[in-house]
Image (cartoon, rainbow, N blue to C red):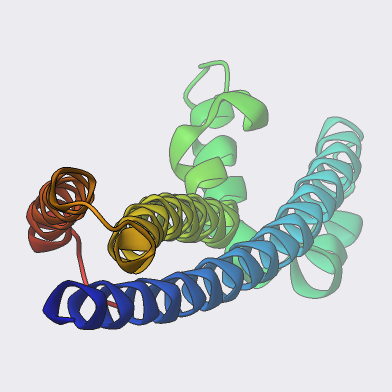
Length: 192
């Protein structure tokens, strides 16, 4: 009876843990998807800003080549993004010094700032996906453990069906060994 009780409680506990870990897996997968959506939105926004800045630079460069200072001032005051003004001023200083300005798409600081939110969201998505996978693996481990407890229940449960001592001892021994294996596995599994 003790083996039956232990196997029943172990089986119920394992099934409960499977349910808990599956819930965690689902929650983390949902979090990962939300991060991916945010990351895609932030990436699209950053890409649009780069295109806008590139168009602003083109207009400013045309005005500078044409020496149209009124248009340059208008572009700086109304068209160029405030966050892009320092970069444009650095470029103008490079041109005034006779240097070739840094290519906008090769400026790691500029791109890093614009795509920082997208990069952070992607990192969050990867972390949540990893946690989801780990929770799924834990649920799988507990499913395996549930099967061990079910085998022990079966062996211990059919013992009274036999009249002779040897098969009963053999089945009870098998149930005991299976419970010992299940117990040692259970000791190493995380609890949700």
